[in-house]
Image 1 (cartoon, helix red, strand yellow):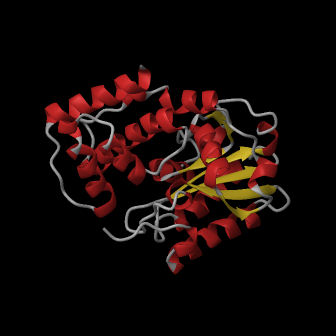
Image 2: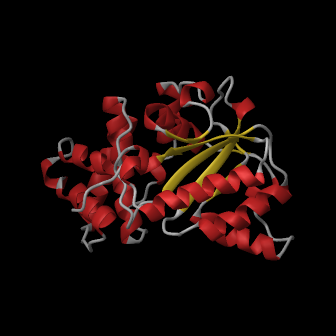
Image 3: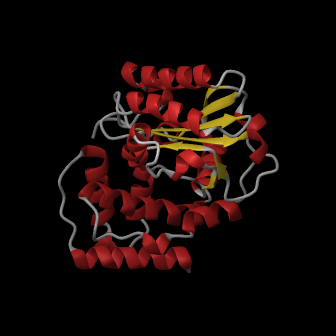
Length: 266
């Protein structure tokens, strides 16, 4: 498998894409932008340009108007996929001090919302609730915990000056609340592989109190799941990181799912 990369090893087009994201937010929010922080696989030094996305958290001084959110979304659409998929959330500085879980999100962009943003941009009556209001988002808790662990400052003050520590209790509540919803049977192969590795990350955190990359979580699972199921996380890693086609027998998938969820909830 090709090597997994960290921030200091990014190919020039990926580094340029991040630079353009920072430039966009500084231009759109003069005097309002506090900082921009990178988390996800790059921060965990487990990034593959062919399959990874860019995970970014912006911190702003105040909430954003609908007009500003749409302007940001229109520009984010242009940057998305050039060359990597983008996922960016924004939070207010005042919501970070004191920290209260689950966290309040004032902007979110990802590939999942791209089409809805496009519809709203062409039709002001189209529904897109992330444009019209702030909303609670438990994922913000996860982002901040990872940023405190190994996040990268793209713009703004040091991490410790902006983000408070996230307790194990708050983080665990954020990542474990919906484990029963992880379905191994109704997803395309890539998302099936992702779900296997994410459940492994959740269980590995319970045991190690450290956030692992999907890659490291897959390796961790090979040492902690029943012997007869160890091949499944290995196949999931092949799909997620190398784009290979793999088969996943339904009976073993369900056994692995029940095993992981049982350990997480036990």
